Image 1 (cartoon, one colour):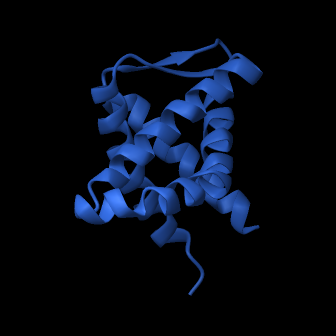
Image 2: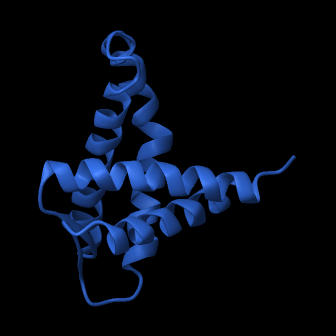
Length: 120
């Protein structure tokens, strides 16, 4: 159940990023692109992201946590590539700046959504 809640929160965050960030475009004609993109990002965040955070810990400490945003941006690129490659729906990222801003938006919206639906 926790994964489904996290998936929905991530899907809402990806939708907000696509809506707010001008360099992010939707690919595909189906209406399920947000679910596929949210699923891809959720699976990457749960599997690959902890390993990358551990490997980049020295750089993150030297930059006082700012490098963590670069890791989030890389995970967003990976999620876009995965959803476009496997399902032919998802989103397109035009530049690193757009992906960087979108990763900030996704982090903020995901934190808000997870705090709203979290079990106390």
